[in-house]
Image (cartoon, rainbow, N blue to C red; front, side, top):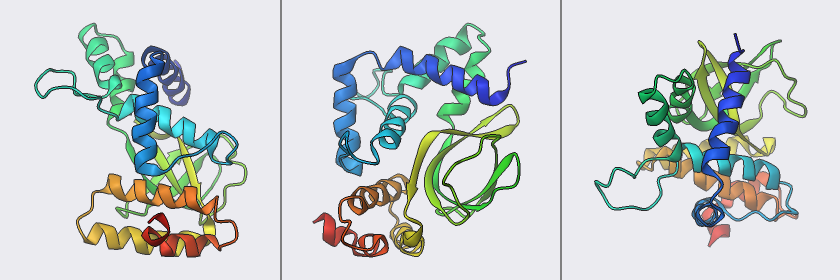
Length: 220
């Protein structure tokens, strides 16, 4: 039997191969993504993580344009899930796990062998993620945008790993709570915090925490 993490990885690759071939559509989606979260260039330290998060969002979450009721206003992965489910393909369960996955901001609170313990900064839930790999450079207290996927009775990491400066933790929590208290959607909170991450990599003369505190005043 294939391990859950390996099965998730294999199905994710299949989804990517199926749904990212259209370069024009991907470019439109990238523009949409960057308009919400900030633009990152290839020579930027965030490029690799940003690109991985974009592709996952594009396949799992993004709803392309279309007319209401045309049956096409669903993310690409949903269309694949319907197809696999109808044919009884066992991969449908993993695709369903991806499209019902949870993307949020998490704080790493412990890293015992074989798992990572997290707290959802936006919702407060405590979650254990099965992880056999060593996450180099990751420390307790780090805050990151992550996607969590329930597969095979355990929670696995998706491919979204966008770490925020550790020194900005308090500013991130304060800003997120203030936005949620105003009724702002979680997705919009995550995207605005992501914008601040791009700014912190450019305003190197300014302490990261200060960038997050100033927020919209810097973004204009």
